[in-house]
Image 1 (cartoon, rainbow, N blue to C red):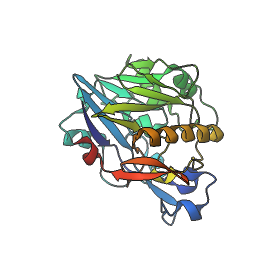
Image 2: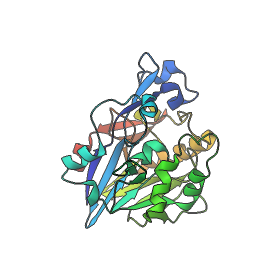
Image 3: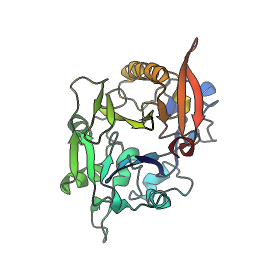
Image 4: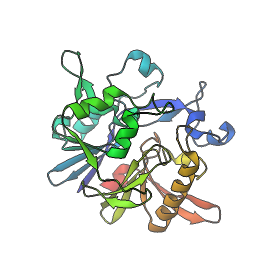
Length: 287
């Protein structure tokens, strides 16, 4: 097995929204904001090469939305999925599986693009199976008012219409790591959104956890620091607390999808609770 970080593009989000009830005087120490209160955000995806299977976890927000849409997110840098794949010797047509932690636009938008004549949308990964789970798919395609702006039909329906959509088996009760059809463990959690999936990958004796929106950045390490986007913030507190205690005990390596400046971290127990242990680049862990 080989692992590769895939940078799908950096953007900015409102710091207050990203930290919920935590005051700016506190969160700006770890995630400094610009004059518009915006903080740096990454869309760092993960590519798993395992035999003949090439699995991409999440795909960023993509490039098909309008100029007005992207104007809200202040993209910066020159990253893209195509460029990042090419840097590792791959093409999007090589991808066999696209695993989506959840279907908010900044995690799955890069899965779908315009067709050749721009009359409609089609999957960008023509040879891949797209993976979600039935409970989350229903949640996303029949959205509540709070999340409606995050679940975009143009990101979702083309997966189904192409026949490439597949569903993971999900447990009735979340909070347990189950083995997935893609040969890595998946933790199902419900605080951020219904049945978000957190991959746990066994790699060279280490457990690599793709954190998605359970812990978007290192600044969200403290258990009460959950985003304003979470639909069930009190549940997020419980889920995050349980996870981080296990991460410290078992020395999980936490792959940070949304942290533009920290890539992988480990955590440890202390008198003050769970705290940072070490920081790593992807190259240090994957090579």
